[in-house]
Length: 551
RNA sequence: GCGCCCGUAGCUCAGUCGGAUAGAGCAUCUGCCUUCUAAGCAGACGGCCACAGGUUCGAAUCCUGUCGGGCGCACCA
Image (tube, rainbow, N blue to C red; front, side, top):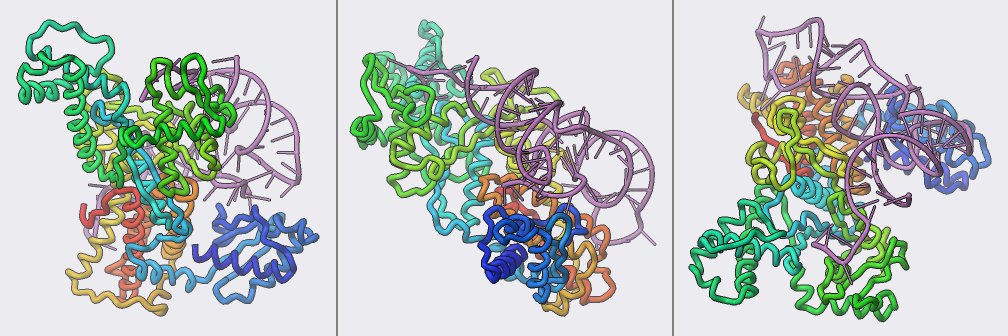
């Protein structure tokens, strides 16, 4: 990040001297081929038209303008007009000081400028325990929040509790049905109910608390009692599962509070005033086609019941009222058809949907055991729930696995592979790199090695290829955080970490540290590796994965 | 039928705003432990970036079409 920023500044001022503005589409990035230096830029090609000069000629003039900078080792014009820039070893060696100085804060940025972002995720109906698919959404949402926070956004995480709709009534009914069953009452199995085993203990609770009394009251009242109990218990279970998975929500927002506060009616009135909603066929409609949706959507059914979407409009209005500049919704990919109407909703609220609403779709998870797919539907086996999977493989493995793919691609979650301590399970590879460094420090202490303080002279001893590769990678960590935040892609962090861990393992094999030959060289290498471990730890923290000192 | 996502090595996947000779792991094969953790390292093998056109100095990346896979098209959530 330092290198990119410096180069950009140098180039921009060189261009300015020629009266040329910074071209928007300029890239400055590490070239694929190391022979092309540390950073390559296409700026001359991009600015060629404005400069009224052929790219190579402009590049040559920029080269001369940069050549004097002491931080640069070389500047070359290549190919159709690329500028290839290499920095001096001393420049890279400073990175160790940067990391040491920042410590846990290495990689914290201010690109967010305090912009307020809300990340809403999981938000599963409290009608049953979380399953593995929710787990992926949970990992992505929680990690994204950490990344955005690190990038300098003001972030609040939220769980929306759908506690008001039909599904909750069905939960109450399901519990009541099981309750009657426990009492040996003659019952017929309802057509549509939650048949999971987790309902039975809830019914038993009802039996313990109320005896046969629920039979003597009106059915609706009994259902309500069951619903309230079920919701409370299931929600408590969800909270515990998420906690065990190291997933945190700042706010738990019940749908019912929207209704109680009249927020839904207020939203309806706003839409009606704007002529964006109307009555037809006994129902109340939102004119979402005005904003590009395929068809208008019903808000109030002709039976008088609200649709899910109705409270969702009120909910998003409430989010913006609370002052969020950007609202992130994380949904299962099977809800993608919902995106246009949600964008329409944001437009209707007078917001630019592209700027203020970011919907992240999380693809389904294929759970595999022994290479066989485990069905994820109602009749799934033991490993269906998130809690079971976390108990089985551990939060670290599960989180890293979920975060090692783009969220919108399908994920094979192989229980056997995730438990293995091998490269099929990259979390160990990364954690092991951290542990290796920490154990070197433990060993250094054991051997009474006094690790010298960092100084330019000491760090000047870091001259091998492996030294420089590690240094350059460390310097890229803040860029990676920036990219992950900008593209809402926490998986970039896990790819970076695998890369960094790989370099560390190679370094470890090739360059002896404690037995380097001199205390100074040993110290310099330890300082470098300390910076590596710190960076790995910071990165793992963004993923919500632990960085053990020993393995 | 309409819409969205996807198609990159045998497998699982990266690939940023269009950049130079296409990347990693797994699998397979070959080497490396009397020395700081072998949960590791090095090397080899492996490609029509689904296909066909187009845009331009330059395309895995952008546009159009075709084929293949997933998902969605409710007064369900």
